[in-house]
Length: 115
Image (cartoon, rainbow, N blue to C red; front, side, top):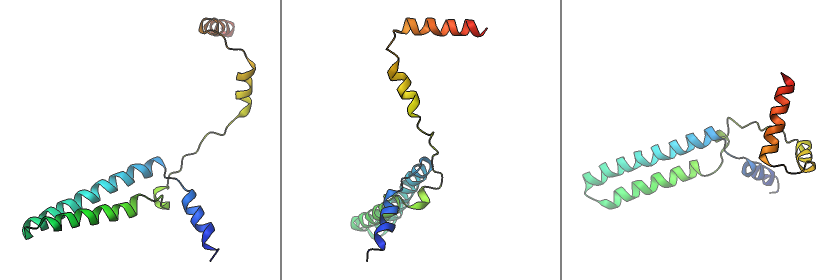
């Protein structure tokens, strides 16, 4: 019974990448529209609004089960983040805050020296 806990936590720890978010949202929209159109057609033929509502509810429920969890297939293009460098942050804290004019002057001096 305890063996399933690590698998569940690994599944919950995943996050959807940007392309996965795009395709998940597109899939959700298409699925709801298709179920809505089918529900409208069947409801119109039967002259029963309840059938239309049932189709829309089924489409919403199915799309929620497919799109809401962060399933592995929504994370096929993970983002590679730049590693964090704490040395840069320490250097910024050591330097006192300078007005923009002084910073611009320093940049000009450095560019003139480089030439």
